[in-house]
Image 1 (cartoon, rainbow, N blue to C red):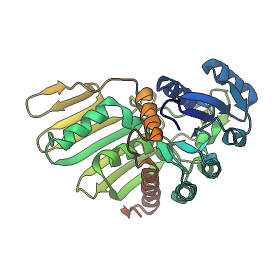
Image 2: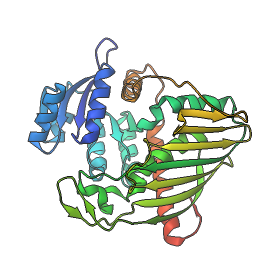
Image 3: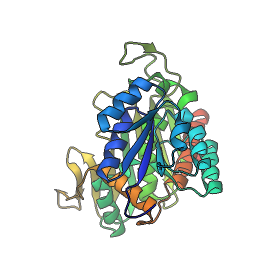
Image 4: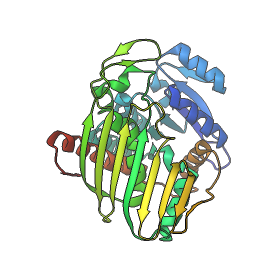
Length: 338
């Protein structure tokens, strides 16, 4: 790819998250060349909305295009492995919407295919690109909070109401843990390192769900999870995950407790506030739309302008933690992360 030409991207999927990716790509200077979704009407509606010139109901047609340098895979979770492996074989770089896949083994299969084809593979973890996360990394590096002893992470929403597949374990590999909890897990690992063991409990508290189209479904996966993590660094963390809260969290809530101070992220005290023993003070955080920050970084990595990240391997590591959560909940015991 020439540095003088915009990166040309194929968008695979037209669900709610596709708006975020398309707008972010366009803001970052990339061109969205083609859009795939199984519904031609929906594809054309989305293409007209964003000025995308080509639409198709076959993802293979996007992968075969010579004017597509890379693709974003934002299709239902159950399709990620198939499409990602096909993308690797087509020689296209890719950004896979979280979770990369339903299981650790599916993640391994995708990573193997990318390595064999020598293509670049990334996973979309948008929460890493909030300014308060970047500022928190600085606080931790400077040891402003001292030795970190405890972290409290919350991820909570009312739950997706636009598609039944979110509530089918075979479609998503789990439930709320896989859909929103995985964001929190990634942030915890991103900031505090490897998780060695977990103690968790899960539950399905809502036996019926009403979707936006009026249909009623009966979920077979969890909508609530409470987990405790032990990190290799000695840090401990609690993680509350809910798919049942009307107000929920603003993306996430994180509380960091250290020997010199406390930091709260995305709380009633603002984006980032710290208390070092003399009261609370709000900190300035890097500005800029999260979509632009996210996709600008991806484009820069594709161009070789910034070092590649480890988001693909992080996806596998996070999948191993989620599987430990489910094993722990089943056994009602601490479970080591594989």
